[in-house]
Image (cartoon, rainbow, N blue to C red; front, side, top):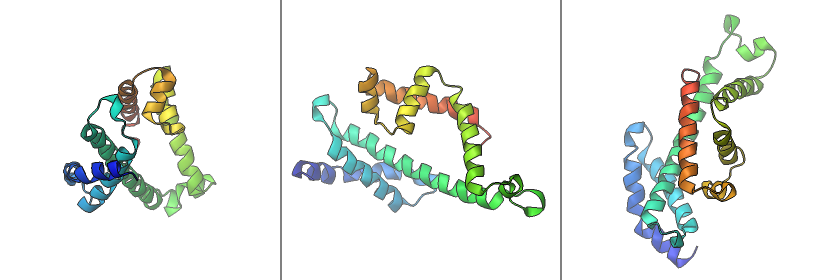
Length: 174
């Protein structure tokens, strides 16, 4: 890591603590949130491009928040997976997946695929393409914006709007 990156990280550690503190009521340990936020800060320091005209703190704040939210999402997914394994029971306590003739993993995959297909069905062609590039291929928003000839902010808004539409479709299913 370059000296400049070290300085950016050192100067913005308070920002990580501030942002982590804003998630305290979400039921996660403060230290875990700070740790995940630090990952976001390091990523921000490594990828920051001052020629784009943004303040580092603005860019870093987004990266920190994104990393913390990703951590929270992983934790919820893990808890939900445990819940599915414990709560799904079919006839006379036999797990549903056994009653249907295939394992838990296949059962979860069929269920998730069906739900995902329904949720993706509410998106227009452009939204579907951007969501697939971002989540399916793992491209960064900046890479998508270059590929499609639109701004990174537009990509971010499209992803956010798409996820809102998908959540509304999935409401009650998760």
